[in-house]
Length: 379
View 1 (tube, rainbow, N blue to C red):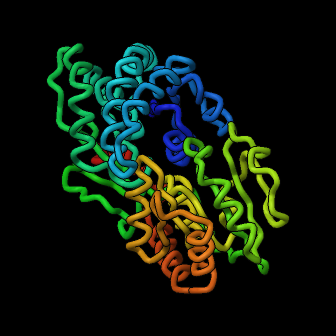
View 2 (cartoon, rainbow, N blue to C red):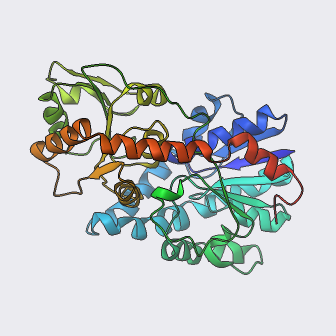
């Protein structure tokens, strides 16, 4: 089978699909990945063939800045509903479709797999008669947001003589859900056929490092310059713990100097390996870190700032595996209190281990490959 993956260029949109793409390759199938030129190296470094498609470089940066400038006065918790249709719909879909359609015509895939923020693949699939599967990059996106995105891309469908389907065509075939049900904070009634997919290739059952405990701090690759970061670092520096901070590949470790003696800062870390060793995770609740921490059975302090982070944080809190501080609640003292509570109250770690077990029981990427290539796997 020839499988064409497609994604926007953000780390949080690329990395969740890597396990499934690798599983296709391991099973002997041919995989090609289309993404923004800014992310082809990210894909290739994971052993997968990548080609550039869609908006990239200065044009992408300028477009993102325009969208986020429009959203500046929108409350953080409401920003995802404003940004998603404008960024992933209006800005990115038409340029991606213009590149993806001729690529698919020439490469002739049997299956299209796209992350939920890449909305050109359903159009291409409809034009060519190729099934297009939607791969979640975290929890489900609320009905009203996907509906707005559908209207935002209606002109792209019309350009190809097609009536725009509901929800940008994302749920016509199959939706691969990587979020365990216990932390899924969105009603999924608007989604058609759903198949669960474990968000990690393997679930670790390693015990955290011995004393002093390791606290892992990251605000991801988008909010990694948030003004709250120095406050969090200083707060953790006063605790009897070791602290590892990941500021992202474009972050500047020197911006946090002078550092407390128990804090180490890196641009990029092997997050899966760190999650096996740490006792507590402090993060923005971006989906990669959030689900990775749960898979490792680690309690976490969620500090949501934008996008789907508020939904993730809500799900983590409901499961008992996380504490949450929203904007306006974050201070040195509130961080110290929350992290101390996560370290001394075993109920949080116990709840995280329950979710880890749930994740371990989800179908593996290899099992999902079998579903997608077998008879009846697609409709």
